[in-house]
Picture 1 (cartoon, rainbow, N blue to C red):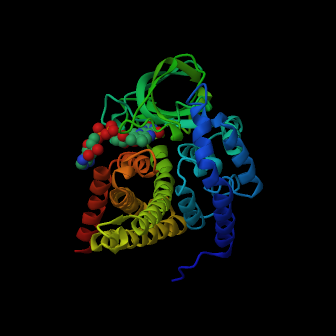
Picture 2 (picture 1 turned 90 degrees about the horizontal axis):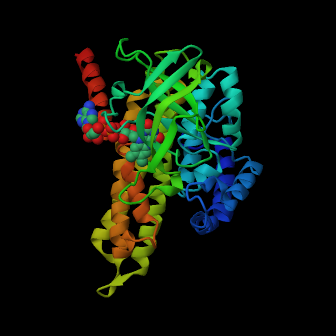
Picture 3 (picture 1 turned 180 degrees about the vertical axis):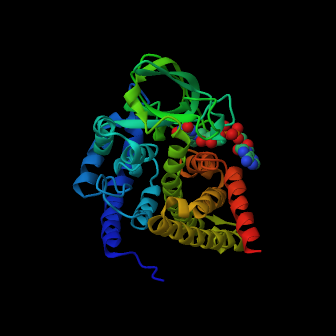
Length: 407
Ligand SMILES: Cc1cc2nc3c(=O)[nH]c(=O)nc-3n(C[C@H](O)[C@H](O)[C@H](O)COP(=O)(O)OP(=O)(O)OC[C@H]3O[C@@H](n4cnc5c(N)ncnc54)[C@H](O)[C@@H]3O)c2cc1C
């Protein structure tokens, strides 16, 4: 077993680490100021510093790193994992700069895997080029959406078109006017088998009957830096039948295929976020003096620092193993491990952020440090791409099955 990264990964890591130091970290506050000055506060693709950073990232070969195969950088999951981790250190900016941000990444993967030539030309190419953004619309307010078979939005065939009716919420990125295309999940045949009722279809933002109502808040944050999460409706929204992705009834299977890589990307980035939290925690513990001693001299704080390091190392090994499995036996073969990292990572990183906040005192809760916003962000990951309990339920089912077979 070799724990070293290969030569290509090391080379890209060095380039990315340099880019983070020279461009990303210094731009974080500039980006925030420029976003605040926008006329349309959601139009953050139009922030000047973002365009400059994107041009520089491309120039350095740091573009579409997430995408294996000919359409992207051609990296394996194992090669991409340590790079995604680095981008997670500046989660609001770096992934978007490198054209590696969710939900565009998952949407591009769907188009690569299941799109027609025409769909790829029209939507995949500008997404790969970073000129447009996209959203993925599955979750609905009226039904428990962790069980995707509940999705009630209708996609009905009418001549050469499909007509959509339904309400969605938590649609990440959809507040951003540059999100020109939505992949929408709905039911084409409610009488079919439970997992064959759903389909996915491409709906351009400017389709008549598509309406964005509001951005959802996370603990009072609007999650603006991630493009917000929209509540939206489709009212007799009509698109050509050629916009269907794959065949009718394939929606559930496509959703499953889409979520594997998405989940591991989230976990990789979260580990980078945890590393940054530990850096902040240690710096603050060394600097701050209470009762005559730096906080770093207190046993309880050393315990948090040590625990954080142990948890990060454990998580990283499991994430890298999962990436390796995805590369060698495929996403399906790595299913259990993908569930395991999706359960373990957000909870552990939430714990680390909580301790980093505690070490910072009340300041840790404030806008003066990135920790409170990061905490809100990581808490959402215990829902996004499936709640913890659903993953635990599925993992336990497969473990029980394995144990029964072994007996
Ligand atoms: C920040 C953020 C971004 C998101 N982005 C998107 C997006 O871009 N597109 C999109 O379509 N959706 C998005 N979502 C929605 C997300 O995918 C859903 O919130 C998630 O699937 C859960 O669905 P629900 O909220 O309807 O919860 P419900 O389905 O109502 O579940 C509620 C709770 O029930 C419990 N539960 C459910 N099933 C089980 C079980 N089998 N065993 C035990 N307990 C169970 C769990 O505790 C769960 O949290 C996003 C969510 C967040 C927070």
